Image (cartoon, rainbow over the protein chains, first blue to last red):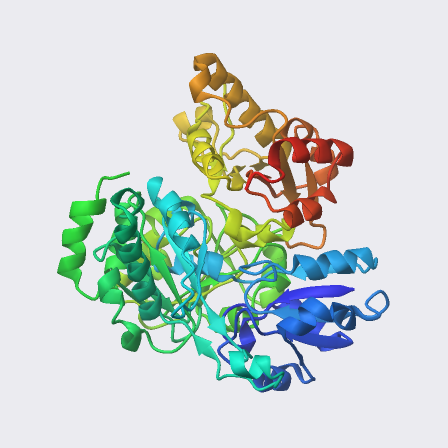
Amino acid sequence: MLYLIGLGLSDETDITVKGLAIVKKASRVYLEAYTSILLVDKSILEQYYGREVILADREMVESASDDILHDAQNVDVAFLVVGDPFGATTHTDLVLRARSLNIPISTIPNASIMSAIGATGLQLYNFGQTVSMVFFTDSWKPASFYDRIRENRAIGLHTLVLLDIKVKEQSLENMARGRKVYEEPRYMTVGQCAGQMLEIEEVKRGEGQDQAGVYTEESLAVGVARVGGRTEKFVSGTLKQLCNADEELGGPLHSLVLLGRRTHELESDYVREFAVDKEGWDRIWKRDYAGQQ
Amino acid sequence: MLYLIGLGLSDETDITVKGLAIVKKASRVYLEAYTSILLVDKSILEQYYGREVILADREMVESASDDILHDAQNVDVAFLVVGDPFGATTHTDLVLRARSLNIPISTIPNASIMSAIGATGLQLYNFGQTVSMVFFTDSWKPASFYDRIRENRAIGLHTLVLLDIKVKEQSLENMARGRKVYEEPRYMTVGQCAGQMLEIEEVKRGEGQDQAGVYTEESLAVGVARVGGRTEKFVSGTLKQLCNADEELGGPLHSLVLLGRRTHELESDYVREFAVDKEGWDRIWKRDYAGQQ
């Protein structure tokens, strides 16, 4: 059996009782650690489970999935995924491959950022499609998120923005030379995300007014850090204010929610509590959001 | 401290290790059991936790929340919620009340149907806003879901439809007479949901063509039952086919996903596996969905 087991969002004790029992008795245990991370290291997990955990990087999951699935017709293989196994990243490829090998599959769900984001007090019913933000480079600033946010905002919905993480990445030079030397891991912050959002708004404005104006420096948003963890932190404010909220938010992982105009008053009351500047929040809320359902 | 603890979706072992430790040592343990249910009874939970669990009905949570919060400045109170504490139903009222009483709050996230629905193989990124479907009566057929599905479909997104449950409901007669006699619990099925969706489409068609046509009898959808449980079941097909899939799906809880035209081929491949009629699925997929991104 191939077990896809969600680990939740924070530490080793966020696994479910059901999931832990499977990990303890499986023949092999893999940890997918390139699309998200827990706030604890692999060694902590190994100690907690009392057994070895094999790190599965992107290469292994995408190109060497048969190693992971080896003999899973006969023995139990546990594939651990931070969050929910079918959360932000789905492992449909791996499951389709397992299916084609007649390997039975079982999923143990867990918390995902896609639902845990409800801890902001914003109603999950009022979220539109989720978007991803990648690290911009000088020559690569993909802006497809902008049109998706436009679609969400046109119908008044919130947008969850998931932020890029870079683990086990090679520099272009090392890649060109075939050197398996990896860069330090990088985790995008709320400040970087808000900055990139405003940068693209600026670009769109330059391209012509009718394509721009999806949001402004004064659009309200919530920055979140380490959701579901003991040190969970929320900071709300305008996109401009959130450009400078990284220190208050602290370490990774960060996400951001851009508010839609269909925001309910109870949602605003709840989120206002985390505002950088409560008076400013109230002024903008009253001007741009209240009663706009 | 007030602990809001998610129980996950299926049975007593879906609680997280962290959540279970808190339940075992809290002074009082409440179970919110009117917006969703686990697939096991309260008595199983009590046996598993080794302690009493107090059932919190809607009345208690909405009108007598101070009983729940009593002395939580000094002792630990655990409030258990099926799924994630901030999932389909948010308990913002309870949390705002706790805040006003200076009670510290901690949330233990868990799987929610809002993310576990990814187990269908449909990408969570491609979902729009979630809608709810209530039981229609002869005189009350609320159709606000229809406009929200229209918004999702206009931009090509999937829609998760959460289905009504009725627990501890009084008949109109018993309510009028003030008799605290409750009806048998009822859980909406995928068949009932698909039937009501097609009924409203019919009504809209009668009201004028420009308001209608959000979906048809041949729109593709996935019916799901007991997601995350050992007996999890998926059936895919047209809305018309799903009207008759209840037997195959089995007992509660059910949900339904209406596909958006932005469906990726890999998503279709995955979901097709559960199709009532694979050839019919392929024909409609090719005609109405493939390459419509």
